[in-house]
Length: 511
Image (tube, rainbow, N blue to C red):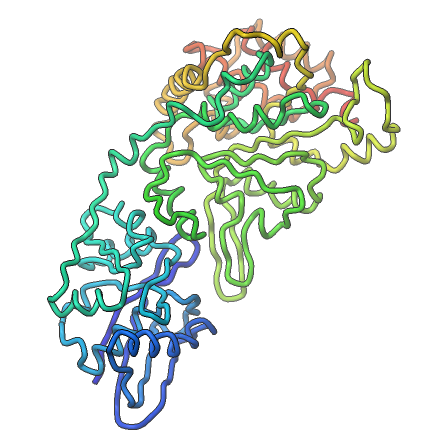
């Protein structure tokens, strides 16, 4: 008897429907074809034990399981439940014709319970696109899959529930998630709040500008000056995610298996990999490609603490994703593209000893050591960072102040208003949403300077020895500063402030 059951394979962040054909006939043997990996080949032992422990039979016949399309490599243990249902139907232990209307996925334990899978949201989206009635997946993944409207999503705890469901004996009901309610859970009382930061008003201003325009930023300062503390508070002032951004972000985290019992991700991600991270862990890849840190930070923040301590080749692989806002991983038989539109926040000490340019600290690094340390960060990478700011230690008087600083919620209100102005400005463009994404053509269109501002910028570039690459960055940042003031045109004081945020372009830093 031949039966068709449907599962799903996830490549990148998109799913592909897999048809699992199960045929039983006279003889003995279990044959699994269609490019399965080792985890799928081992499924027969898990399925046999799970069925036996739940009083069902693993048929003593010749069983052939084909996973179509047969030229597409299948991986992981999530097909256990799909194959098990196919075997039960082929051996007439399930007689329902409804099986073909559902996508069925889940990893089986030996007692018949289900383990969570990866990519449930992508699977549910694909199932709806292809007109399936619903999906049956492990209970741990039901929240994220139920985000998809117009699809019946059933959370399963044991293989018996699936059999009872198709035989009309069960009382399974589809899970319904109110996405509006999930999405409206804003972080009004963030764990890391700018109200806790004493002093550092100029740095807070920089972070506000960076958040408003989506600009990459690097903080340079001695140990203990508050670089990491400030960086961790950046997500608390970023504007709330749109529904489109939330779905994109949830999909990536779902593929990486990081959304168990979470549902829709309404908060922007903050990723902070250690400086020992490899190139693959940062950009993604592997023999079975998985999203890396830059994709997990999509629509959020990637924080690289102690930037020069990262291996140079690791930092260099970020250059193209920073520009294109996506990363493409190529293999011999397939190519996968992961989105990676993130804000880069980096911090570094100004020297190996940490106290360069500090008159009160002993000089512990020679000029050669300094040059070797700073040369780990290439010019092309710095070219993609809009704002450079020096962080100085907080004086004792500021540390002991009892006055409460401005909260993240207040700052976020201003940032959100500035982002709304940018959204209206770029509404006719599909892939541009904020100032940091502007191309040279858009900069010429939206960053027109008056004569005074132009002369100020010319003078600054000549006197401060600013590099040519600083020109576009200054214009982008000044556009954001103008947006924060709701100013239609860029004024000279906007340009003057933006010029201050190019420390590393000045002679003496990276000469």
